[in-house]
Length: 267
Length: 267
Image (cartoon, rainbow over all chains, first blue to last red):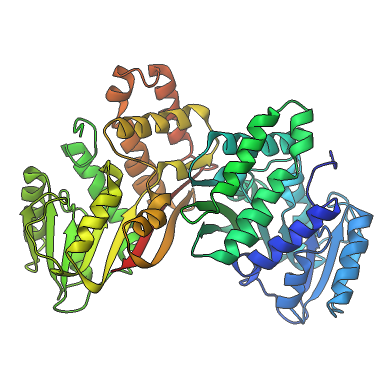
C-alpha cells in the first residue's frame, strides 16, 4: 500500500485524524459502548485516534487494539496511557493473520480501515472467525462520493476525485461507506443495520466549519496535493481552484455536506 | 415555466408524488404540527400530496393552501375533502401576489416549491410579508446532487443530470435542498435551523426499495426520458443505461442514498 499519502502515516495527518475524532466523536461513537468484562477487538487502530473514544465509552470492557504498523501502535499506546486508560492492550498485528484463536472476542470494532483494504470482504470474513457466536461487529467508514456543497464547484469535485483515485491506486476505496451493507452481507454477517451519519455544515455551525470542513475534510484533500499533481491525476491549477472552492463553502452563505456510515452486524 | 415535464402536472407524476408522500411522510412531516387555532399558509400545494400530511398532523389549525395552477387546486381540494378534512381552505393564487394582507399567517409551510422557482429568495421574502412577527416558515426541498448509490454508474449520474438540466432550463433548481440556509438568510429570516433527512436504502428495507428508489426517484428520472432525449441533453442509450443502473441499485447488494432538507426560520 502506498503510504506516502494515506492518512494516518505522517504528523500532519495524525493531527487531522485527532481533530476529526474530537469533532466527530459524538456523531460517530456516542452509541457504541460495550458491557463490563466483554472482550473487544479494535482491528486497525492506527495512531489511536478512535481508540480514545472507544476506551472512554466502555471503561470496563477489555479492549485489544491492533494495527499492522508498529510505529502507529507505539503512538497509540502512548496516547492511551497519557489519557490514563489501563484497559486497552496493544499489539502489532495483521488483520488477515491475527494471533488470536477462534471466538476470542465478544465484539469487534473497525473504524476507517476498510477504505484502505483491497479485499474488505475477506478482512471482514477473517475477523468473523475471531468473533464469538452472537457477538457484534461495528464498522464505521466515510464516503468521499457523499461530499457535496454550495456553491457547487467542478474543480472541487475534481480535487476530491484525485484523492479517490490515489486511494484506489493504493488498493483502497474512498467511497466504501455506502457499501457497508453488501460487504457485511458478503462476509456472512447477519442482522445488519446501517446508520448513515451525515455531517451538515452551514455558517451557523462554527465548530463544524472549522473542525470539519476546514481542518478535517479540506485538509485531507490538501494533503494529497503533491501526489495528485505529480502523478498527473489532476492539473495543478484545477487542484488549487478546487481547494479554494472548498474553502469558499465555509463563507457565510456556504454549505458543506458529508456522510459517514456506521454498520453493525452479528455473527 | 416548462410544464411538459415538471412533476405535479400529469397523472403519472401525480401518482408518483402521492407514492412519495406516503413513503416519506414520516421522514419529512412527522415533526411539523401547528397549534389549535393557528393560521397556516401552505404556499404551493400542487395537487395536495403534502397537504394531506399537513392537515392530518395539525387537525385544529386553520390551513390555507394555494397554488398557481387552478387544475392542481381543484385536485387538491377534492383529495382533502375525500379524506374528510374540513380545516383546509384552497385558493388559486401566485406566491408573488397573494390576496392576503401583511401578518396574515402565524406559520407558513413550503414543500417542493422552491425547486421550481427562478427567484426563490424573492419568493421567501414576499412570503415573509404575510407572516406575523415571531411566526415560522418551514421549507422542505430535495437535492438531486445528493443522490449516490452502489454499484456506482456514470450513466445513472448522467441520467439524473439530464433531469437537473431540464429543470434548470425551466428556471428551477433540482439541487436547491443544500441551499436552504443561505436562501432563508438572504430573505431575512432569523433563527434558521436546517435538518437534513437522508433516505438510505439497502435491500433490508424492502418498503423503501419499492416506495422510494423505484417508484419515487427512478420513476421521476424516467419521467423526463422524452424531454431529455429530444432536447439532446443526453443520448438515448446513455439514458437507458442510466435507468437500468438505477434499478440495479435495488438488487440484494445494491444501496441508494438521497437527502431531503428541511429548514425552519423565524420572522
